[in-house]
Amino acid sequence: MPVKNEQLAAIFRALGDPSRLAIFEVIRQSCADGAEHSSLDLRNSVSEIAQQFDLSLSTVSHHLKELRTAGLVRCERHGQHIFCSIDSEVLLVVERFAQDRQA
Image (cartoon, rainbow, N blue to C red):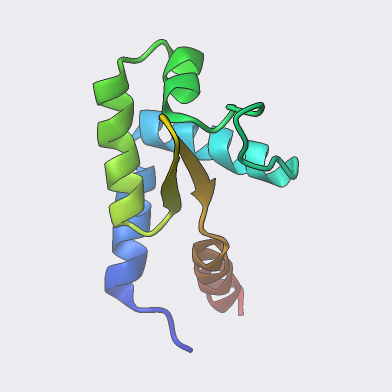
């Protein structure tokens, strides 16, 4: 399936902001560690992300909204916490884009 330019532009625009890129990387690393979302493991909760960057919850929420809109992350509520994970499909889109440019 060919990658659409609009989709790639949205992805790169979202990751073009240094704070969003850092937030995305924290979520990606945590997901790569095989972390499951539970009440005992809050590494990917919005509040934990905000603490790691010394950012307000509203700022982190704004950045996560932009990442969600670009299709980079998924967020789901579990009780009082909202957990974020990487949409692995979007990583494949970016990987295909990079491979097409190398060919």
